[in-house]
Length: 247
Image (cartoon, rainbow, N blue to C red):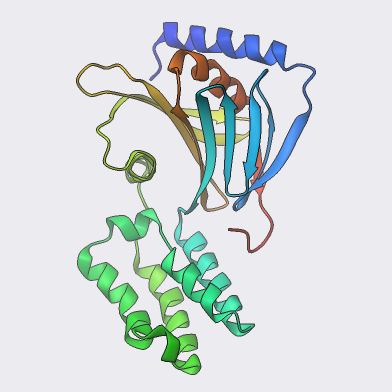
């Protein structure tokens, strides 16, 4: 849990930003599978790159990104979207969508489970350019059915997955993790630091929205500058489902 002094400082700094942004207009963007409304912190600029949103002030940067399906239902939705692409003749787009499929269920499944899940697909598409269309349709349906054999990710696994996707192989340690309800949405708010010095802090917050992961993080720059802006931005965010078929 957040230490009381950290909470008090964070709230005070965020309030300062909110006051500075009180006349700012609420912005609305589509971030992959999410429709997001937010108030831009004072003096920060916003760059809209679709599934990735960037917020910058000098060398400081905060990002907001869609990390894809977090639940079995969302995995099925992704595979059904691929199936729809195949049915309208967009074969290459369909293959790309399948190749990009990621989820915590896939990552933490056993090797045998992953091999069993992908086997109907790889058996048919090992040479994509000559794969039979009828066989592709059947393989897609087997993938969709195979999702049901995965177990949903536990909260601990979900956090582990998000931090892996964000930090990769960088050595980072969780300083603290807090679960917060913000504008009706359940967020997980994590502070990271160097495991040896407990310095070089950064912040990651995520939520599962209609089965898909939305993640915010302090990318780079001076943490003391970006942290209050991150808090102000996070507490202003309102999230709903994005348009059907979004990526």
